[in-house]
Image (cartoon, rainbow, N blue to C red; front, side, top):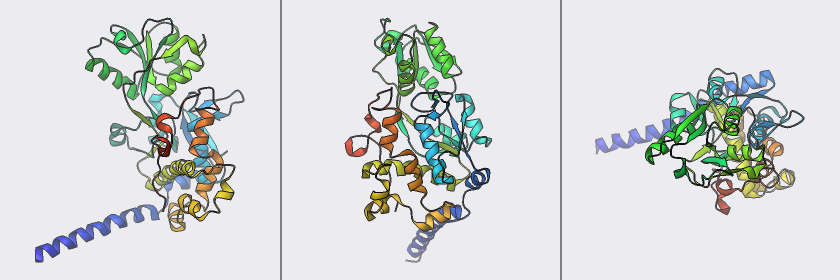
Length: 344
């Protein structure tokens, strides 16, 4: 009986400690947030130019899913979606820029992996876009299946999950594929256009962006139907600031939850009067205070970006040149994977 009682006490004590740890971690607030507030601007690492994610338009304004998400975080943290400094980064520079504090947030179509979280000192806040690795060939090429790439040269980006996936797939399928590894999206595009490789491989969304601007028109290239990996893309922060991770994570979850509830930028004020909606989208006051955020931060994020569906449609979907289907990026209520945990 004594041993049983001791075991129960140990379990209860462990549970109490687990409950206490988050409170201790958050009570001090976010060092990153304090630095952003003092600076008056959120420094957000983005791509050098990938349509649909982060690219500058003719006027120099950054557009895309990642750019919009940066603005939503800036609206939540600083009250103004315009207070973002966009820092374009090559794939090889993205994690060093985050670790050395050159940027506060990395939103650059980056795949969430254990290797990265376990070795690079970073944490992924969630999944902004479900993607998969694909291959692109010229329409005039006879290649219509990956098996036809045996003996071929394939262009792939350095320091990406695509590079390792290509080698793994070739080995597993006994294909003699010769990778031509390049350092940037522009270099990948040039090498493919110059005929240095028979195919280019990358995330399907990136290939769709390259297809849309192909010199011979979108019909001059084909994205093969086969997919060789899962690529969950999401925003990244350093792993030394749990409060900042929590803020970024719940900005994302707010945008996802709002779509399920039918809350848009246009009806935000009206819908927030509904107690069920405000309960689902407005965090507890004590949590807001512990995070060091000003009240209304989730509503500010929504007012900036709109809900997840609005953000997808204007950057990737029906209102964009890419015309991508929602697929896995649809709400779970329509067969997709987008689902947010409860806020309260």
